Image (tube, rainbow, N blue to C red):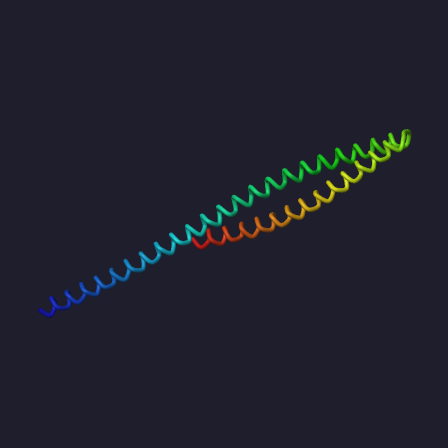
Length: 134
């Protein structure tokens, strides 16, 4: 009967160990699920920031084209103003102002692009950290 009691005690100890292992596995599954959700959220933010950066880059490119066109128009107007009337000189001034205004808009767009690039770097680092935790 001592052997039977020892076997029963061993069985109870194994059952308790199994119960602890199952609780730990449940906890780890919950942690993994939470980290997976965090990673998915970080990836969604990352994707949105990539889209924003792409749109901003396109806007900058369009602004640069418009700036170059305005600059070209200003140069053409300046050449014509040298040979023409006061009215053409006023057109040159308007084109130069437009080129200046577009240059300022380009500067603002480039600053926004730098900001988005930094956000993208930060989000990428967060996503990588969350992925490493998995």
